[in-house]
Length: 248
Length: 164
Image (cartoon, rainbow over all chains, first blue to last red):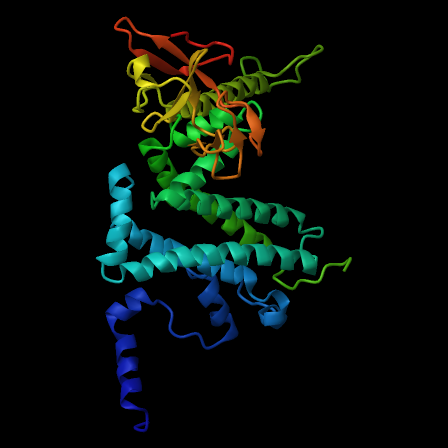
């Protein structure tokens, strides 16, 4: 009994305290049932399956491309929120704020570059993921609708990239959005009204910057989060990443 | 027993509908109207009524400021004022392909777009490149004090030339 290390004893004492027991109701899981409950009854973990097949963890099954895409999305969200501390979506301020972030703010250049790099990497990752799912036949029945959701996620990724591109308010941004919105106006009937709503006017100015900012930071990420949730849920309910269907 | 409420029976007759179903249909219709109304209200809200954009009608100086057989680029308005011996007209400097700003090239007597290589004559006609339409002509008039006035919202035909 006396041979337990001092830190283990300390940990055991900590676990007996009232504060600890009020936060962590069950002790460490020692049986299979309590191990299942640890995932099933946990707020953060209960959306995950309690068990996964060992096969689905292999790198060659999916090359983890979907996970990489999701990870990049998380990186983009966190770096994006941090960038929001210094960025004003206003016409004279935006360009100045970008220069501020690059030259003045501590680690600003790192976070800004990480955001931009993750954005470009995410576009590559989602395309690669799509090609690989196609190669694996993961779109075949009964998984067709998940493919459709995936295409929706692809569109959201590209539109997030596009709206984010305007925010530095430099020449590259301004002309890219000029050309892009003019392409939209070529859509018959709805093209010009859609362009007017997107820009909040006829020219690319303050209204356009603000609308693109709201789209980029609120509307599109929320839509992406919802579709990501459905996309994962479908995989899980269908039996995981490497489920064998009857007609394979 | 008499006086007890009767259980609702099946509605009789063709197209008969029970009171419950009728009320449900009314409620469903009301919800549909509310939902459509919500979408319409949101779209109207998103479409701005007042725009803070540079004015589209502007003064361009007197005709004497422009020598005969010249093409002058007004940078702030992105408009060319072209004067020939036949008269004057105002040309948009925005390329009709995808919206880049064109440049007047006197050495080749052409208006050229740097983005995708569209080339226009000083009349606005497309000579080369992916531009689908000629450069539009804006309404050019003389104000009371003899000053040129350009209205970018009014596109006029190529044949309308201001004689000075």
